[in-house]
Image 1 (cartoon, rainbow, N blue to C red):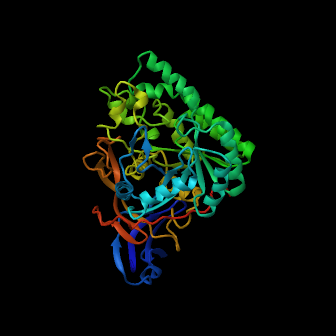
Image 2 (cartoon, rainbow, N blue to C red):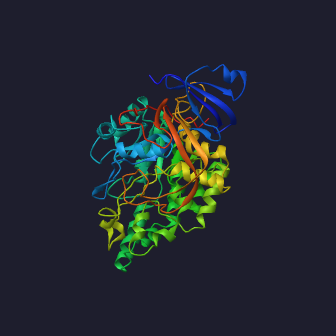
Image 3 (tube, rainbow, N blue to C red):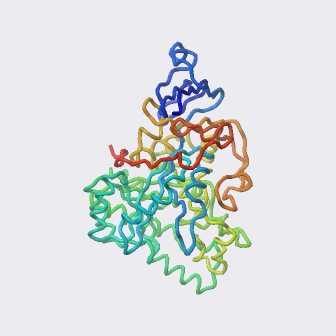
Amino acid sequence: MTGRKIIRGGLVVTASDEIHADVLIEDGRIAALAASGTPAAAALGAGQTIDATGKYVIPGGVDGHTHMEMPFGGTYACDTFETGTRAAAWGGTTTIVDFAIQSVGHSLREGLDAWHQKAEGNCAIDYAFHMIVSDVHEETLKEMDLLVEEGVTSFKQFMAYPGVFYSDDGQILRAMQRAAGNGGLIMMHAENGIAIDVLVEQALARGETDPRYHGEVRRALLEAEATHRAIRLAQVAGAPLYVVHVSAAEALTELARARDDGLPVFGETCPQYLFLSTDNLAEPDFEGAKYVCSTPLRPREHQAALWRGLRTNDLQVVSTDHCPFCFSGQKELGRGDFSKIPNGMPGVENRMDLLHQAVVDGHISRRRWIEIACATPARMFGLYPKKGTIAPGADADVVIYDPHAEQVISAETHHMNVDYSAYEGRRITGRVETVLSRGETVIDRREYTGHAGHGVYTPRSTCQYLN
């Protein structure tokens, strides 16, 4: 057992409170909090003491959107569940929700079993699954009910990637109707893939083959159009909707309007849309390929709208969509044809730090940082209050965070299994010092002490953000 640990002297920051408190951990859970220096704190008794003086004590991050070992475009995301969850821990994330994939012609169960096999015994931190639904028919719909009962309570559909993951409006409506009945949450990749494919074909015919054209053909208007359509289909079905990786001001406008109308519509964005732009996609010598993901990076002026959306709660969550492909040998598959560049970027290790930098820069408050990175993803995906907060009864997923330490993000020093960093050379303030997962030390003062197999599969209840 992990025994008793007491974290003393830190500023405990949750989505709702900031308090100088000592935290007692027993048997892998938070047992008590007591204001520092009070008789109650003294009464916590003895145990292994972790000194957090001058540091923040925050809940471990919950990354609700990762793709470890994901097959894409003839290759695989280069982080395994082992390397990816270790990197997540280094970045202060203690739970990931990854995507199991249903292949066309196969059942949901086959896809889920395959992902359980990849992850089991290999994770440094706890994990759960969403289900990608690629083939909607009567059997699929029945299986959705069964999956919700066993703790896989969200289903992702794609309006993009015809021939691979694409669902048409009828399939989307059927899945949404099923979710309305069983309590599941539909997650939507909202881009008009049919129209995008026409623009891709036309761009390549004009000889426009560089990575920057990836951003130009995947128009912001086609993200907005698909977002609008998804919202209306969900409204017809009477189902809640969660739109993944919102990148464009126009798409955010659609979400905000729906929320103003009282619809249960939610949105996430990702650090790449908040910190990077089409300037990166346009980097010379094919370097722009490092930044190819879908939805694509947008012109810099979209960033202000996304930050505003996070402040006004029109966007509720920041996840990474971590899906890394090495520049060498993987991204290079698209030399001479941007449409063959594997879509995805590394980021699971950088999210908590980049969002702390956003606190330093005045974009969001400290509590909002914890809300969008820990508490709301936990509530959205049925993991709260086990995950996402520091409160008696919660899992002792705790990060000691040094808000004053400075670091430079670099592929030289990161732990993701990928040969470049999307944030290479960026100087930021704030750094993870110690990480506990269910009371066990995974990072101890900047040293990795965790191990594959500590992380366990965590079934989820239905979305807790609706009420």
